Length: 278
Image 1 (cartoon, rainbow, N blue to C red):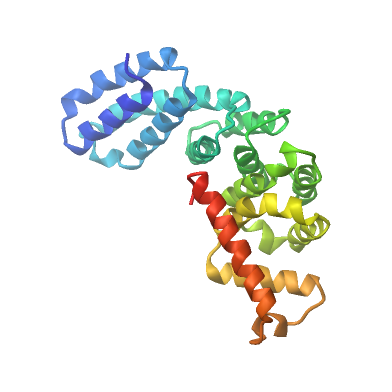
Image 2 (spheres, rainbow, N blue to C red):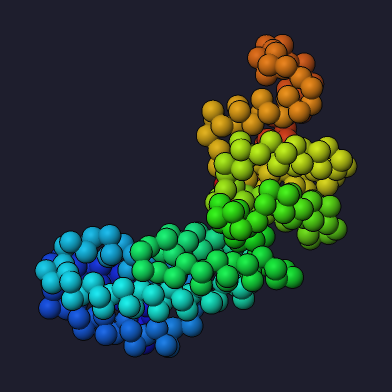
């Protein structure tokens, strides 16, 4: 049988092509598929697709009737997908990022009128309390909870420290975890200087080998910021280290420092390429 994602994509095609006679039968098929579809990815994608239909519902000929059926189905899919959030698991980085992207889509669905957002946020709370959630998804979920004021900056710093001060695999996943936070709550750095200060202080305590392990994912995590935002971050770090603006505008860079920086950047980029990310 076809999953909810496939059927919802077909429904979009039918609406865009203005084939109203096929809408009701397809909605019935989607409703039937909800019970059988046990894949989070399919359900989350279907929820986003149906949200898109909600946003273009003016294209439906009989919008009042069809929209009532559609919203009912959307809420069922959204609730089932949300209920699966605490149990998501993967060791694959790309899948981890994909799960986070789908979760961010559910966050948008949760904000729609008529949708019970508490279902989503309660599931996020369960997710972040799991023993070993996928790191990027973990950071993504915490960022969404932070944006809703469900957790504090101090809570966020505690989670970051748990990763950075962790042993073995926990520490290695710190960069991915930070990337997840920046994926949904990038503004935390600019609104709360103590968050960036906390990261900077912890990184300063790492030995060289540990830092090199984290470097590729840290590089990728901060690549989500625009050049102007990176300049603001650099200014904040410089100030926290007791340096003035001249540290950022000084023209003369020692050759050894420049060479080391280039080699570190090339090293990080190569590791990311080997992992199929960059």
